[in-house]
Length: 406
View 1 (cartoon, rainbow, N blue to C red):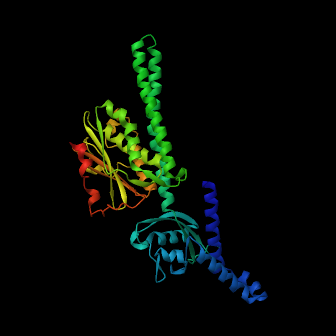
View 2: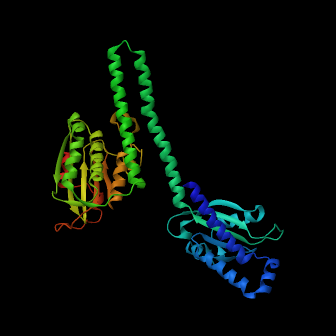
View 3: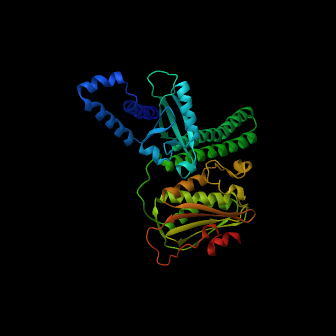
């Protein structure tokens, strides 16, 4: 795929520069014989080349020897790069000067938000001198700019993802190797063998969970198309999610209370929504003290079903609340082994919400607990639904969802 992209990009840039060359760099020795045969040929060819430049997605700029912009296609003007024949980005002007002294150059250039409007954009710039041969006098330079903001972001995410996956996989795999060696050395001690075998089973479960969640996250991020959305009964989702986390909760003496509005239906994929709510409940169980209560329930608000999971656990520091939905991010790294967490559960919840046209948010106070709220569009309009007041998303849920704090 990367090879195909490179070939296509090369063809686009090559076509753009070729067209620019036809418009601005035709040598008189080439043009004279053609004009003699048909004086209109050169003009028609130049017009076609300029039309090609205007239709191209990459931004194309040509600057003369005085750095005045003499050609700027609509894509370049849409980026706000030119004003009164003047190039507004100093980094691009620097690239033009480098091209004049050193020949063709490629570079990634950051376009400031105040120039392009909105956020900062990153473009891959290809600068080429249009003179047929080097000259002492500065000549015209063509710039072809391709927006690579998203491509570079994806590359950075991929590198970070691969690095994190490698780190996360090494921990249980390394532990299994060490435990296996220890078991070989303790073959004559049945109690020690049993202890190491139990630990190996724990690490194997952790590794299996990590692999499952990696597969789930890969599917949610676009490796597979999202199935067609259909009405999903919220009560069924809550029942299944509570059932999946029941054993882990019972082991810590935690009670899961189910409440809120019954009979709601959302548009979605049932197994994905069940996975999301299960992850929220599992997270609440992992970070709640023993013999406490967790509340889960749903309500209708603003055209969405809000599924909230409330615990009375350790809470989340303010500085970490915006990052808890990042892949592999953990508030307390030291508890990762004891809780069995992979750092992927909440990232999966975020992607499920996004794929369903919804969102997920968190309210938390250290020492008081947390409430995670998953918002999914309703399948049918709820007559009793009322608009969400400003700032409501930042408030702790009321009613039955507060039971977890008692």
